[in-house]
Length: 206
Image 1 (tube, one colour):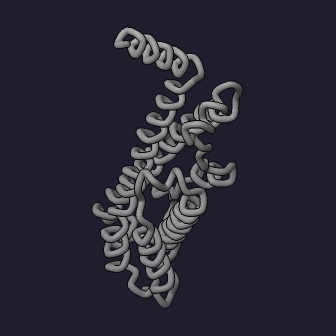
Image 2 (image 1 turned 30 degrees about the vertical axis):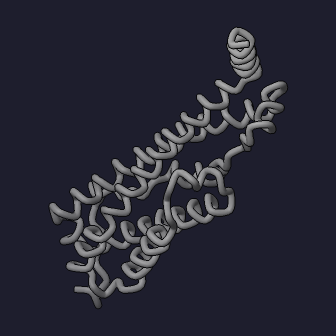
């Protein structure tokens, strides 16, 4: 009887390995790992925002609308519970992507405004923060690309025969991914050429 049980267990293991179960598990873990890195880099960017806003405020306090826009965009990002579970909830995933997109746009506007303030542009703290932001945006792009590839591999496995049958039995479902327009957005991270000739500050801001 014991030998029969061992034979049954061995047969089940061989069946699972042959129908793609192990591949599904492996791909799912890869998604979790790459998604964690995406979250880490987005959190790194969010952590830079308060110092960046305060530094700009010190030189351009009158830019209330832009400063408020960045602060509110960061608040929206912080209001979303960024957990590994997001990759299993398409609606929550899209809310997360939309909130991050708003923060990207708000940061872009903030850096463009900085062009009008030569003293701000020459401030060492601001330049350091700007360099950190640019580096973080590059890391976000790399992390997102890895996540995209991991999700593509996983989703193909989930949809392909015969692993699609295994996926149905064990509850593996396709994961949400970044859309093409998201990648166009992240491919143009906030960047200002601080080496250019300074733009004259508006008269009322002198």
